Amino acid sequence: MKSAFLLAFAALFLIAPAEAAKGNKDNGKAGAAKKEKKAAERAERAQKREKVDGVLDVKDKNKDGSLDSDEYLIGESDIEGAKARFKQFNKNGDRYMSKGEIEDSLGL
Image (cartoon, rainbow, N blue to C red):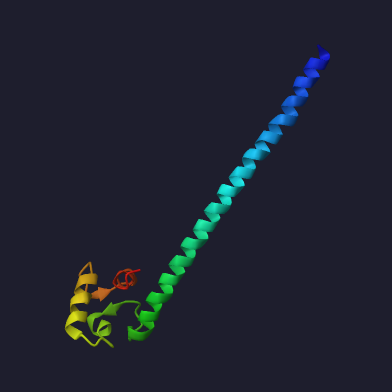
């Protein structure tokens, strides 16, 4: 009877940690995949910010972080088409394109 108790006790303390470790290994893979996904999302956001900042560097003459219609038209060959695009992407109608609106206009 004593040996059966010891055997059950040993099994409980030897098998359970082994099973838990196996589960942790699977969680480690899921955690690594999550970290990879978050890193990719951060890289994508950084790339979008760089593109928007590139447009602002060229066109934002007053350096306020947005573009009014005059700034947006800088360097545009088709003025009428550019005016139409400005109206289309200035979604809130405040006469300024925010960074988010610029991002949308770039198709990002």
